[in-house]
Image (cartoon, rainbow, N blue to C red; front, side, top):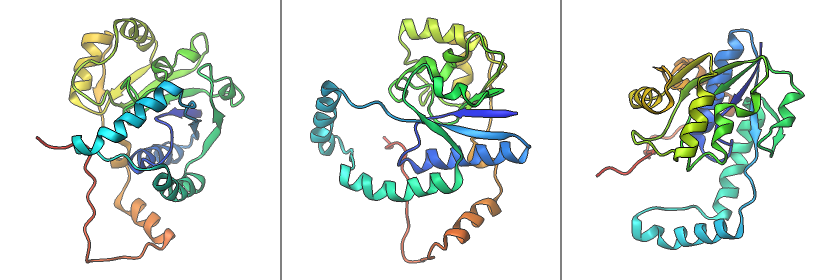
Amino acid sequence: MRICILTQPLCTNYGGLLQAYALQVVLKRMGHEVWTENRKENPLSLISKFKLFIKRILAPIRGIYYGTNEQKKVISQYTELFIRNYITITDPVTSNTKEVLRRYAFDAYIVGSDQVWRPCYSYYLPNYFLDFTMGDKVKRIAYAASFGTSEWEFTAEQTEQCAALAKSFDAISVREDSGVELCSKYLGVNAVCLLDPTLLLRKEDYVYLVEKEQVTAFDSKLMTYVLDQSE
């Protein structure tokens, strides 16, 4: 099958890149042709730029750090290289109607993993419920999709629209147990909890990446990745 994966835009989030890579590896090993949507973030409006400016000013007070544009450029030179080398992507997609994707004649669409169903992270939420495929004869699947929280953050309008779209899915799995409950309570669909794609690969798959890139080993430092601050 020809499959398109929709996840958060591939950028400098290396956790997001690894799950995108892992899901492609698994599907390709099953014999499928796979692409990940190359979603490009829409340019920020003046209001959005102002909000981001205020966030960066208040960040030190709240104990949050936002990287500068210069720092992101340094990071992206490596993450973009990883994408080019290891993730098969579509042509750039900038429209919510996703006309670009029709050129590929996909047989199936997979939404996930990552926090694709969190409104504050998803520019146009209905896209992650495959609204643009309505009327097409394709398989619709959610794999380890995440709401990013145990609380319901959709507006009433988003809930109504996405609940209708979710019912057209052939299969839905989420990343957290709480997601199963949210799907049932607010979307009116059954879901199961499955592993994040990164956990579907073997240790050797990651060792291969390290060895291929000839990463220098070190034993004097420890790196941590903190997703959320503890209380």
